Image (cartoon, rainbow, N blue to C red; front, side):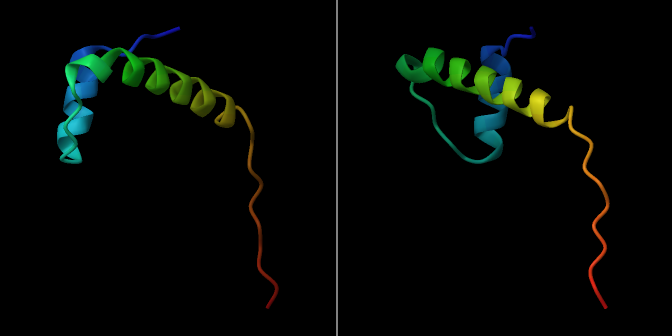
Length: 54
C-alpha cells in the first residue's frame, strides 16, 4: 500500500487554496489514504457503455 507524504498533501491543498493546520495533518493523511483505497476498489469494476434510447 502506498502512503501519502506531507508534501503531496501540501501540494493538493495549495492547489485548491486550502490551509491545513499542522495538528490536523496526520488525520488528513489517514483520510486521504482511505480515499485512495476506495478509489482503487472502484477502478477494479468494468463499467459498460450505456446507450440512451432515441
